[in-house]
Length: 207
Image (cartoon, rainbow, N blue to C red; front, side, top):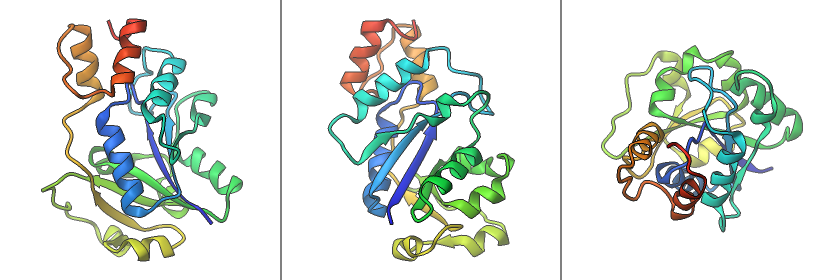
Protein backbone atom coordinates (compact mmCIF):
# COMPACT_ATOMS: atom_id res chain seq x y z
CA UNK A 1 0.00 0.00 0.00
CA UNK A 2 1.34 3.40 -1.02
CA UNK A 3 0.43 6.84 0.26
CA UNK A 4 0.15 9.19 -2.74
CA UNK A 5 -0.42 12.94 -2.71
CA UNK A 6 -2.27 14.53 -5.63
CA UNK A 7 -1.60 18.20 -6.34
CA UNK A 8 -3.78 19.58 -9.13
CA UNK A 9 -3.60 22.97 -10.82
CA UNK A 10 -2.74 24.74 -14.03
CA UNK A 11 0.85 25.45 -12.88
CA UNK A 12 1.02 28.35 -15.30
CA UNK A 13 3.82 28.70 -14.39
CA UNK A 14 4.87 26.42 -11.54
CA UNK A 15 6.50 28.58 -8.85
CA UNK A 16 8.36 28.28 -5.57
CA UNK A 17 5.15 28.41 -3.55
CA UNK A 18 3.92 25.26 -5.28
CA UNK A 19 7.19 23.47 -4.59
CA UNK A 20 7.41 24.53 -0.94
CA UNK A 21 3.84 23.40 -0.30
CA UNK A 22 4.29 20.08 -2.10
CA UNK A 23 7.49 19.13 -0.28
CA UNK A 24 6.14 20.30 3.08
CA UNK A 25 3.02 18.14 2.77
CA UNK A 26 4.98 15.18 1.45
CA UNK A 27 7.35 15.38 4.41
CA UNK A 28 4.75 15.99 7.11
CA UNK A 29 2.49 13.15 5.92
CA UNK A 30 5.46 10.91 5.01
CA UNK A 31 3.99 10.25 1.57
CA UNK A 32 5.62 7.73 -0.73
CA UNK A 33 5.02 10.00 -3.71
CA UNK A 34 3.45 13.34 -4.57
CA UNK A 35 2.11 13.78 -8.08
CA UNK A 36 1.58 17.10 -9.80
CA UNK A 37 -1.56 16.91 -11.95
CA UNK A 38 -1.53 19.76 -14.49
CA UNK A 39 -5.09 20.45 -15.63
CA UNK A 40 -6.00 20.82 -19.27
CA UNK A 41 -8.62 23.36 -18.23
CA UNK A 42 -9.95 24.15 -14.79
CA UNK A 43 -13.78 24.26 -14.70
CA UNK A 44 -13.43 27.61 -12.93
CA UNK A 45 -10.80 29.23 -15.19
CA UNK A 46 -10.11 29.84 -18.86
CA UNK A 47 -7.68 27.50 -20.61
CA UNK A 48 -4.00 28.49 -20.21
CA UNK A 49 -2.68 30.54 -23.10
CA UNK A 50 0.63 28.69 -23.32
CA UNK A 51 0.92 25.11 -24.52
CA UNK A 52 0.62 22.04 -22.33
CA UNK A 53 4.12 21.06 -23.44
CA UNK A 54 5.58 24.26 -21.97
CA UNK A 55 3.82 23.72 -18.66
CA UNK A 56 5.04 20.13 -18.47
CA UNK A 57 8.59 21.16 -19.36
CA UNK A 58 8.63 23.77 -16.58
CA UNK A 59 7.29 21.23 -14.07
CA UNK A 60 9.97 18.74 -15.11
CA UNK A 61 12.66 21.36 -14.54
CA UNK A 62 11.18 22.42 -11.21
CA UNK A 63 11.10 18.93 -9.65
CA UNK A 64 14.31 17.58 -11.21
CA UNK A 65 16.41 15.81 -8.60
CA UNK A 66 13.51 14.98 -6.27
CA UNK A 67 12.32 11.43 -7.07
CA UNK A 68 9.43 11.71 -4.61
CA UNK A 69 7.83 14.43 -6.75
CA UNK A 70 6.42 13.28 -10.09
CA UNK A 71 4.15 14.51 -12.88
CA UNK A 72 0.93 12.81 -14.01
CA UNK A 73 -0.38 14.13 -17.34
CA UNK A 74 -3.67 12.20 -17.57
CA UNK A 75 -5.82 15.33 -17.29
CA UNK A 76 -4.03 16.87 -20.27
CA UNK A 77 -4.97 13.81 -22.32
CA UNK A 78 -8.71 14.15 -21.66
CA UNK A 79 -10.92 16.44 -23.71
CA UNK A 80 -12.88 19.21 -22.03
CA UNK A 81 -12.59 20.59 -18.49
CA UNK A 82 -10.47 18.63 -16.00
CA UNK A 83 -12.72 17.21 -13.29
CA UNK A 84 -11.05 15.80 -10.18
CA UNK A 85 -13.69 13.10 -9.75
CA UNK A 86 -12.73 11.58 -13.12
CA UNK A 87 -9.08 11.46 -12.11
CA UNK A 88 -9.81 9.88 -8.74
CA UNK A 89 -12.02 7.19 -10.28
CA UNK A 90 -9.15 6.29 -12.60
CA UNK A 91 -6.73 6.09 -9.67
CA UNK A 92 -9.16 3.94 -7.69
CA UNK A 93 -9.25 1.43 -10.55
CA UNK A 94 -5.50 1.49 -11.15
CA UNK A 95 -4.32 1.23 -7.54
CA UNK A 96 -7.24 0.13 -5.34
CA UNK A 97 -5.06 -0.58 -2.32
CA UNK A 98 -3.34 2.81 -2.15
CA UNK A 99 -4.27 5.80 0.00
CA UNK A 100 -4.87 9.06 -1.88
CA UNK A 101 -4.42 12.56 -0.45
CA UNK A 102 -5.85 15.49 -2.42
CA UNK A 103 -4.08 18.79 -1.78
CA UNK A 104 -6.26 21.90 -1.79
CA UNK A 105 -5.34 25.53 -1.32
CA UNK A 106 -7.54 27.49 1.07
CA UNK A 107 -9.30 29.27 -1.83
CA UNK A 108 -10.10 25.95 -3.52
CA UNK A 109 -11.29 24.53 -0.22
CA UNK A 110 -13.79 27.39 0.23
CA UNK A 111 -15.37 26.50 -3.14
CA UNK A 112 -15.03 22.73 -2.77
CA UNK A 113 -18.77 22.07 -2.44
CA UNK A 114 -19.20 23.56 -5.93
CA UNK A 115 -16.98 20.86 -7.47
CA UNK A 116 -18.55 18.15 -9.59
CA UNK A 117 -19.67 15.18 -7.45
CA UNK A 118 -17.78 16.47 -4.43
CA UNK A 119 -19.26 13.89 -1.99
CA UNK A 120 -17.88 11.14 -4.26
CA UNK A 121 -14.45 12.83 -4.17
CA UNK A 122 -14.54 12.60 -0.38
CA UNK A 123 -15.30 8.88 -0.63
CA UNK A 124 -12.16 8.27 -2.69
CA UNK A 125 -9.46 10.26 -0.89
CA UNK A 126 -8.46 12.36 2.08
CA UNK A 127 -8.59 16.15 1.75
CA UNK A 128 -5.43 18.01 2.74
CA UNK A 129 -6.05 21.75 2.99
CA UNK A 130 -2.90 23.88 2.82
CA UNK A 131 -2.90 26.33 5.69
CA UNK A 132 -0.53 29.27 6.09
CA UNK A 133 1.27 30.19 9.34
CA UNK A 134 -1.11 32.11 11.59
CA UNK A 135 -4.17 31.02 9.61
CA UNK A 136 -7.05 29.76 11.77
CA UNK A 137 -9.33 26.95 10.68
CA UNK A 138 -12.62 28.41 9.42
CA UNK A 139 -15.96 27.52 10.92
CA UNK A 140 -16.93 24.05 9.72
CA UNK A 141 -20.33 22.49 9.19
CA UNK A 142 -21.22 19.41 11.22
CA UNK A 143 -20.47 17.30 8.15
CA UNK A 144 -16.85 18.51 8.03
CA UNK A 145 -16.43 18.56 11.82
CA UNK A 146 -17.00 14.80 11.82
CA UNK A 147 -14.29 14.33 9.21
CA UNK A 148 -11.70 16.71 10.64
CA UNK A 149 -8.52 15.19 12.08
CA UNK A 150 -5.40 16.72 13.58
CA UNK A 151 -3.43 13.48 13.90
CA UNK A 152 -1.40 12.32 10.90
CA UNK A 153 -1.24 8.66 11.90
CA UNK A 154 -5.01 8.40 12.31
CA UNK A 155 -5.35 9.99 8.89
CA UNK A 156 -3.00 7.47 7.30
CA UNK A 157 -4.72 4.55 8.99
CA UNK A 158 -8.06 5.60 7.48
CA UNK A 159 -8.94 4.52 3.95
CA UNK A 160 -10.49 7.84 2.81
CA UNK A 161 -12.98 10.52 3.73
CA UNK A 162 -10.99 12.54 6.26
CA UNK A 163 -10.04 16.22 6.35
CA UNK A 164 -6.83 17.69 7.71
CA UNK A 165 -5.32 21.18 7.67
CA UNK A 166 -1.55 21.15 7.12
CA UNK A 167 0.55 24.27 7.71
CA UNK A 168 2.97 24.92 4.84
CA UNK A 169 5.62 27.66 4.50
CA UNK A 170 4.31 31.11 3.70
CA UNK A 171 4.84 32.27 0.13
CA UNK A 172 3.75 35.37 -1.75
CA UNK A 173 4.19 33.66 -5.11
CA UNK A 174 1.07 33.55 -7.31
CA UNK A 175 0.98 32.44 -10.94
CA UNK A 176 -1.32 35.23 -12.12
CA UNK A 177 0.89 37.90 -10.52
CA UNK A 178 4.02 36.29 -11.99
CA UNK A 179 2.46 36.30 -15.48
CA UNK A 180 1.49 39.94 -15.09
CA UNK A 181 4.97 40.97 -13.97
CA UNK A 182 6.65 38.98 -16.76
CA UNK A 183 4.38 40.64 -19.33
CA UNK A 184 5.36 44.05 -18.00
CA UNK A 185 9.05 43.06 -17.78
CA UNK A 186 9.08 43.63 -14.03
CA UNK A 187 11.21 41.92 -11.41
CA UNK A 188 9.76 38.60 -10.19
CA UNK A 189 12.25 38.33 -7.31
CA UNK A 190 12.73 34.75 -6.12
CA UNK A 191 9.27 33.45 -6.94
CA UNK A 192 10.48 31.05 -9.65
CA UNK A 193 13.09 28.28 -9.60
CA UNK A 194 16.09 29.45 -11.59
CA UNK A 195 15.66 26.65 -14.16
CA UNK A 196 12.03 27.69 -14.76
CA UNK A 197 13.01 31.35 -15.01
CA UNK A 198 15.66 30.47 -17.62
CA UNK A 199 13.16 28.38 -19.60
CA UNK A 200 10.65 31.25 -19.67
CA UNK A 201 13.35 33.63 -20.90
CA UNK A 202 14.59 31.20 -23.53
CA UNK A 203 11.11 30.66 -24.98
CA UNK A 204 9.90 34.22 -24.39
CA UNK A 205 6.78 33.07 -22.55
CA UNK A 206 4.17 35.42 -21.05
CA UNK A 207 5.43 38.39 -23.04
